[in-house]
Image (cartoon, rainbow, N blue to C red; front, side, top):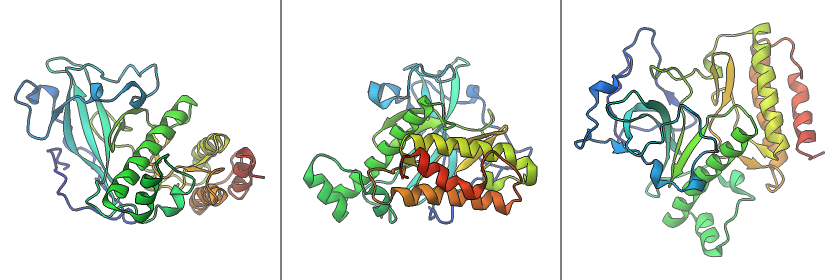
Length: 305
């Protein structure tokens, strides 16, 4: 049974190469009711007032804001547990709700590591083509000073939030980007109302012809990215969620500008080959585009041919 009591940041962390996810068990306890939370002046330890007013207009998600999103300044953010741990960031489950009302929503809070941690050991290739105006800052990032590492963390958070805003407005299947504050990105929680996260594609047991609708959605989302001149950069069956038959793409901090980055075509093709290999390995039969045809299609859509 899953425990939704708050867990602090001192929790052991795992390398992204061996991601750790909360297991989902049928019949497990659901989230605590809103009435069980003390949301007056004496907030429970670790909780906070809503940070909505701390982000500027440009640090909030696209308008119109979804109806489900709680933007009231009287709202309280209550941390409910860890959804995922990784080397670059941890993802927490939050409930943002207004005390003594039924107004609440679930959010995923992605918190990137601070400068005191060894950060982003694989980021050099992704960051090519990303620059800031100050030469001092660029040097610090290249040399991985403490200041430089903090700037890198901020760049990854900014890159993910910016890409999600662009793709959400374009109608791509990504979580709604709620807001960014420093190196924390708040996102729409993809899952059920009881806090059960949507399974990753890698966790599904679908095979054969039943995969065709999912594959066609993946092709469409990658074509959308390519038309914007972007590649996910690290796409796999582990950062594609399947929620009620809909595929949702997550984890875009390493999003690549395929034109500005000298290795842009490589990342574009690698995304296509990674997901194509997974679907082929699970006996995909049919679809609008064959897996081995996808790399060429994405290069064409991105204008790289």
